[in-house]
Image 1: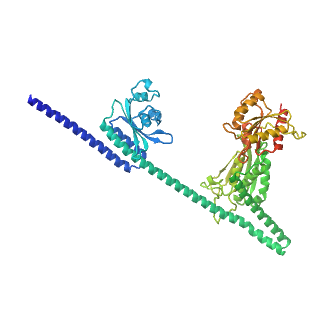
Image 2: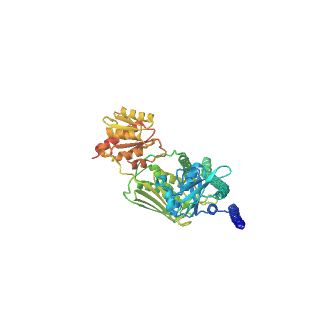
Image 3: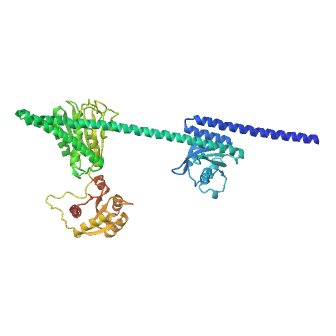
Length: 589
């Protein structure tokens, strides 16, 4: 008996010793894993590989079958999936972003700020969002999530592991997992800080480079400006002094006067360009809108550059599509656009070259295309052609004068008209083609007056006007002006109130402010136009706006307004527009 007990004790001791040795061996192995991971993470350059290394180590430490690493997005308070192992793509997509409302281990850990262990095999009533059942269907019965918290207490993310079988982690596994979590959190924070520092440095360098570029462009522009403004002064002052001496014969006197006029005109154009740019940059360039036929404007611009083209033996051809349609715009500014494009072509086209200008309609737009056989544009400069203060050649040896503002002004004026401008060039020496697209004027509800008709009456008796404006002073002023002219006026402060009043009262004219809170004038008119005619869906409408510098009349007309008025409103103009609108409605069938 004693021998049997001794053998049993020795056997038990051997088993315990083997078990202890196995635990020690496992501890050594896991410690080595953490040490090797730390060494790899320090030198690892790719942060995505870093996340994957952390995940692989977590799965090995917990003897798990799958896992994820998520990063905490402080802006959205969500966990974002960055590394995964063992899951199919559908699972990864479904759990790509998780918040604290989720019943997953990571959602629970995000709620309570501590590690969570979840048994996925639960009743359906305990799984309202279905996330646990998704894990079971994927073959996982349980999982845990451990927050990645730095030494400073900042939540960086979450490391989660999952098992095919029930496997509550033991204390030893959790201890090593905690060591990994702390190590990973600190390393990720260091890497994020380094990345943010690099990004900040890159932004600073980019900003510095952009500032240097802007300063260089400014210096080049000022040098060109000084040259271009001074150059005409030399012949002006020189010939003026010679004229004062009275020693010039008739021919020289005529030459002197022509030279002075030509250079004074050149300087006037330069100054006008500068003033235009100033107005544009301050948002003070306004348009005088009216229906425009583009063909006469093109012909007038061609006549302006005719002498300059003839002096260089340049052939200018025009192809103007008849009845191309009207556009709504400022005739002076549109002629400036066309003149700029043509004069630019003349300037950069060599002696004996060709220039063509075409006018055609397509896709609700008028297309003005100016092509030349001139200097062309280098591919690397094409993106900057329409920028302010940019010239392909700003050196002291440049061949062509000017400030480099003309095309920038063209772009802005075309955009003010609701259009676009583009350029194409096959390269230096291969010419260029500029195309301006301007939207056609929609069919107007106000027909042209018969030549025998008189001016519209200023008597608004019998006319009911619904005025919509959220600003009381403006609303009361408009109402007073209309009432003084004999109109019956209803007022509303919001789009909702206006819509109700319009359906009930069926006014003759709707006069609506554009810039209103909640729903603006465009949204109101969209709802009005959706109504049947008997409920006021075809009411004549006038747009009011305080944004005269930026407002595009074309936008109002396309939205369904028949007219638009800019604030401050002239009383006479207001009465005239309302009267004209109602009289045209009476003449309509």
